[in-house]
Amino acid sequence: MGRLSVAVIEGNSPNFRVTIELNSVIWALSKVRLIGPTVQPLPVQSGSRPTDYLGNIRFNLSGTNKLEVYANSGWTEKGGSQTSATDPVGTEGAGGGFTIADGADDTNAQAYTDGGNFILHEGLRYNDGTTGDETMGATGNTRMFLEYVSSTNSSDFAFHTGHTNPGNVAWPQYLCVKVTNYRFGKVLNRIRWYKHANAVGNVDVFGSNQNIQRSNFTDESLYNHLGRLHFGGSGSGGEGSERVQTWTNSNGYRWYLVKMVDINSSALAYPQVGSQGGYAMYPMTFDKT
Image (cartoon, rainbow, N blue to C red; front, top):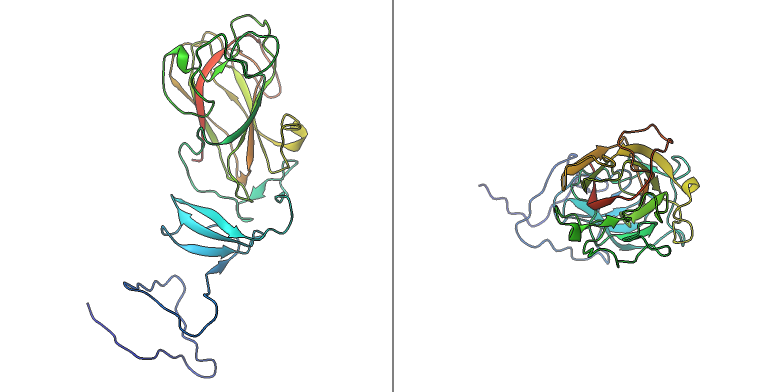
């Protein structure tokens, strides 16, 4: 490999800048030190996030005014200031979705959610109790809703509403997941869910960037409806099998809401509701494909 040794690199008069063509790469196999300036300039960019090299950094001007680092196949905010006390809301529908052009994260991702995500839920009882939605007295449930593990053992159920029909099962049931803290949200379009033979049936998916809290997370007026899915329903068999359902989505959301509406064995068009009763499911996960 050739070697160029210079004491000074200087551009042409009058500004003496050195211009490098767009998309060029300078490889420095040792330290690069800037002596003289009182600040270290960083790449400054607005708009959609590029797919880039591990460890790269930039300052995002798309409303976040935050430093970002590219790691683990995605950009992560690392600091900076916020323009307001609350996260922003986009212009797409009641849920305030952000477009990819706005800066929504559209990077493909498998098993984007896991047991570490912040969740809110209602009606997902583990037994036939008349009150509460987080009791575990009737089953030896050991799995969280998003702890994506394949099993055919009932002790690994993540969702278990009981066995009476409909008994004390509350309908509909809700699982709300905060999928990201990134201000412009994550584009997601698929759920993979391990099912019990007696599974949930029709399910609606919603997205939102509104100020979602425990007191309002079931308020569907705060979301955009993204799709109607079907996960088998009562008597559908396939114990422990994976059910994959997708929807069309090109907007980024920080919150995704899953609304279980029935155990119907056939898919129904939104907003129809079929037969209801007890069901069980193993854990699920969200993807971007």
